[in-house]
Amino acid sequence: MRPATAIATVADDFNPLAVKGHNQPPPSEFDLIKQEIEDLFDEAKNWADGEPIASQEMHDAIERLRDSLHEAGKRADALRVEEKRPLDEQVAAVQAKYNPLVQPKKGKVDLAKSALDALLTPYRTRIAQEKAAEAARVAAAAEEARRQATEAIRASSGNLAEREAAEELLADAKKLERQAGRANKAATTGTGLRTVWKAELVDEAAALDWFWGERPDAFRELIQSLADEAVRRGVRKIQGFVVRDEKVAA
Image (tube, rainbow, N blue to C red; front, side):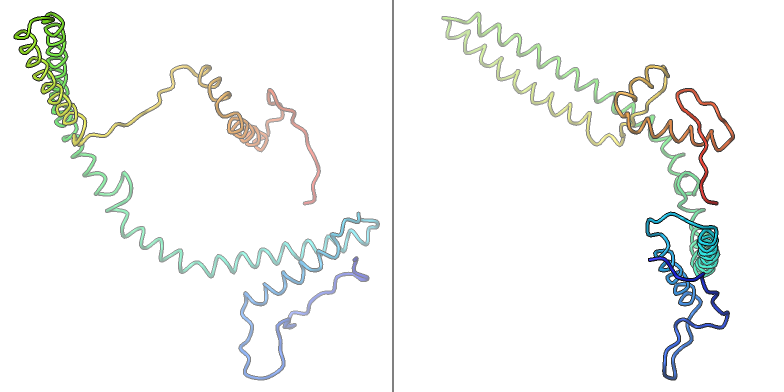
């Protein structure tokens, strides 16, 4: 429902939170601005009922209401900034205190760890390579032993003594296989190394095609954000886009 009259100006000394009785604490700045904005919001709901502006007087009243909301919002935000300033200063002080020690990649802990990792990595890599080579040697020996045992069993058909010897070869081959399993576990666990995967761009066109098919929505968001940024810089022609202007209330 539209207000019947223009917006009334609130007196500077008007207290919207005044209550009857004594010994009531005075309203805080937050209480006052909160009440002011809530009153203006309720007023805005009366105007924003879906009915378009029909006269210059109506336009001017709505404009005054919008200006009042804008100014009240600025004052509320200034109060917010001032109220949280001590907390911001405390957080900044704590960060400044601990950053020299634990700031990622810049603090003394990360700098020292990085320097030590540069010493540890080559040694651990060499040990891991030696263990991997030993595991591969034992695995090859186990495979060869099983091959020989299998051939011996096949050739011992009808000969009990040869079959008995072939079974011993097979048992030895199984022992080697277990040794190979242990060697492989030793070579791949407890190395002190971790695998880091990195993507290196070598073909931009192929990468664009792949991501367009893999994540089309994210790709659209990316190019839309790039186009929006270009328009803000004053670009008015963007291939694949139609750049148009529209008027909005300022």
